[in-house]
Length: 192
Image (cartoon, rainbow, N blue to C red; front, side, top):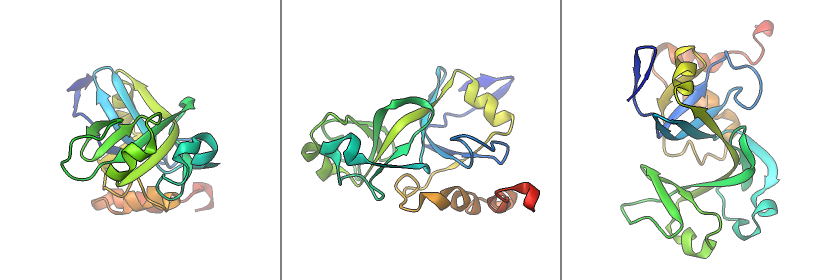
């Protein structure tokens, strides 16, 4: 467990961070982040609802046509944007396929240097991200406390949705009580 100002935090790996309306610009505006790893040294995740215009095949020709729809690179976050990160779903209880490192549930990372023919038969989904989101020790916890992120449970299709433009609202709408109302927060509060 991490500690931040006396507040105890659970491990957030596998959970979603949903940007609050307080974050109103940049890549994290209305972002939904899947936390891939969270521990005492910090956290890493990927923004799952920010597709780019670049086809996966333009950057990784051997993976062309194999990513979940849409078959484009996603903006994973502001860190290491010149690198590609493959996040996959491996269904069932089979051992991890060659080239895949299990993270949690059915989610893992695929080594994009692995020949797709060795991995694809074992995958239920693949998303390729340019960059990732990263937090140093205690940073994410501080951002949650200050109200930048809602922490909610992920559903299996969140990572691979073909309709990423509406994911922020859909994730919020399925939350209990008042948090669901945030989904209707206007794009521009001054026009409300």
